[in-house]
Image (tube, rainbow, N blue to C red; front, side, top):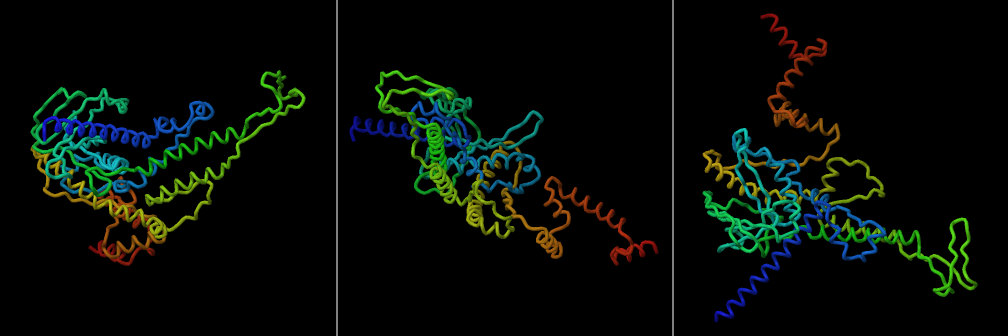
Length: 444
């Protein structure tokens, strides 16, 4: 291939990648705007004439955040991790951070997470987790394993739509570089990690690309609902006031205007009336409901509108059957996030080794399962079954009802309660074994 042709091809590919990167960033910005519930006017305003927005305020209904929170259930109750007492003191914010990271993964499809080891002013060492929403990954032989990553440095949340003023950073296993929009290097550091300090979360398994599609259906539904409800507001306004119409009158003829207590005088043969648009608001509202219901069904969710009859309280078994699809999705997500947790732990251990902190080779991990409510009788029967078969202890049951307690604290409370209750019981109601123990103690 001659040099000119090669240069043209390379420039064409470079331009195409730049356009794709800009479009991807715009899309991610839009998704985040809808999740946050603000700055969404810009997406529906082009669908209306400018004068329309002077009639009614545009609707900014946020169902994205609600839906994303509902389908992100892995970290709703957190996870139990076992890698030693030292590790437990270093991950105090991990569940909190990962709850947000899971939601952003469900929203955007693919999120990069930088794992850091920090030191606070009190001398404590802890891990932190920084999600990166927009990034470009570079690959070697494996198209699903990045060897480097670059992304814009956010100076301020107000800069999210202004890519011209952003600077960028580049990471690989040995180098960190900051550069400006023209490619000029601002800072270059050789770090001692020896590994790329990022791991990557995906909404689901990858198909033909490294990145996975996000919650496009939820965003599109949210945008359509905002448009429809804004149109419904406009239609209701025009229908309530109507359009005044005068027939049989020349445009330059004089009209005597009047208030509510005076008549309007028109020339002979002229007529005055109001015309309202023939719109069916009920059909418009039903269309909105249908769109929301369809989007919810596609994500294994159920919605109930306020004007619908409230359902009778259901048992835990009934709720579990009703929520079977969502529970199945949760179980499928556990397998994916188990892999991500262990990838993160590998980076945590690598950071710890560099700082002289010894962590176990393997991480003990158990995701906390959501519990469906039981009625009082079923709960009592279940607790007694666990106790009778030595599957739990009274202290552990108490911790289950009051998760602020440690097991030692619960054990102390159970022992004290047992002493107080035994002491306050009449002798006739005390157990036979207790009475025998008391008589034996007195004989001694």
